Length: 203
Image 1: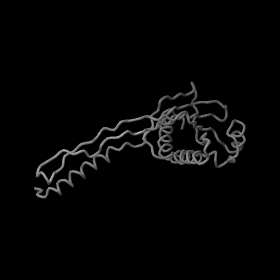
Image 2 (image 1 turned 120 degrees about the vertical axis):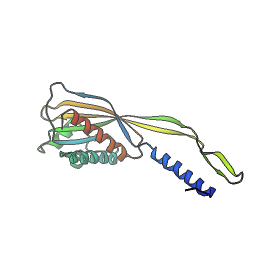
Image 3 (image 1 turned 180 degrees about the vertical axis):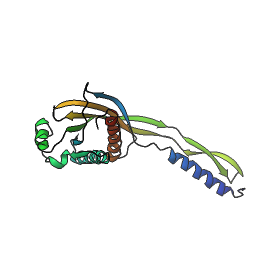
Image 4 (image 1 turned 45 degrees about the horizontal axis):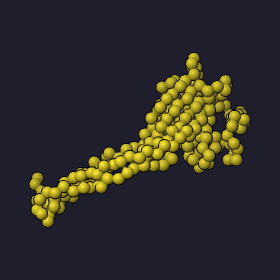
């Protein structure tokens, strides 16, 4: 099929460029920077208390809720600390132990914000070709002039404690990038944590 109308060709070319650009937009990504498991620990967990040590109540609730739902999809029982601990209670060993009493938890999963890094990324101009009607030929144009993007990277540490022995049995450090919302971060981190816990034989 031949295309005789220059504007139709230009529209098609622009559409192709936009589709390619959209396809290249990165999704939220969590990288595991380091992980540790206690020697000779062979226990498995099925009933976890989830704690996000965030000073912002709404972020704590969101983070804990997403982790709970992610674990429940794996067939585990999990409860958010924000559901059983008063908002004005400080999260420490004493208050956590009191909240856990009589609820049958075999483990406590705690996430801690370590750092937020801001990285500057230079995005170069993007070029393409289109039909220039005024000249009756093909001319090169710039679709995007280029810009500077500020990119944040969230570093988290996640710890798993055995309730019976009150000891730390597993730890994971992660870095999350390419996110837009708190939900993006927590969904990505939850998946990375669960994948590693499974690989370590802990769930």
